[in-house]
Length: 221
Image 1 (cartoon, helix red, strand yellow):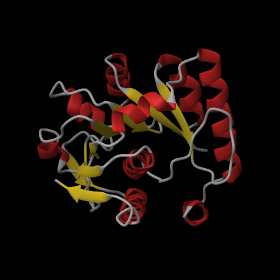
Image 2 (cartoon, helix red, strand yellow):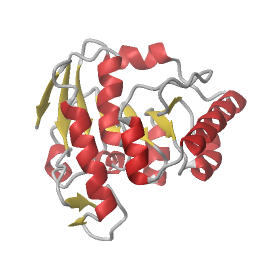
Image 3 (cartoon, one colour):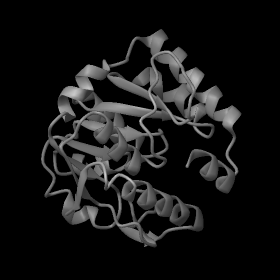
């Protein structure tokens, strides 16, 4: 669905490739990559909880069990109740202070490179450790970067878990509606109406997760 998505949003393949090459160079420079096998050990043959940042996150964050993967800003919701996610999937446009704190306390950060986050990659990659670097361009081979599939942080977390051998996916905070939580965007209140771009992204996220149903068991909290 990559070509369909970038056409729909007006994204640039060239910028996606530029971002991926930059991420590859930086993790080599700072030597802050984690081995893929170490990530696989967390996930393989496990029932994996994946927490998105939809409005149901306020109740679902209390129900998740390890191993748990947080989609970007959802890590803040877990941090607030003193739960540290095993893995955070992020393109570095969410709650960076929460992400850094979780990373310092043991979370692996799966960073996705795309054309709109080049400056954030430059700024934040040197601050992080235990990074698994990823990109989203089909058939692009870049040393030390992976492409597990997916588009938004939530569905990429699902594809990551599937590709690394999870037995079952248990999803929380995944609502795919018109309401978003403060953990999805810095909106100044607990919930709000999603803008048009966010609603479109959530529509693709739901579609991509549904495509996994014939490959792995998926349940919602």
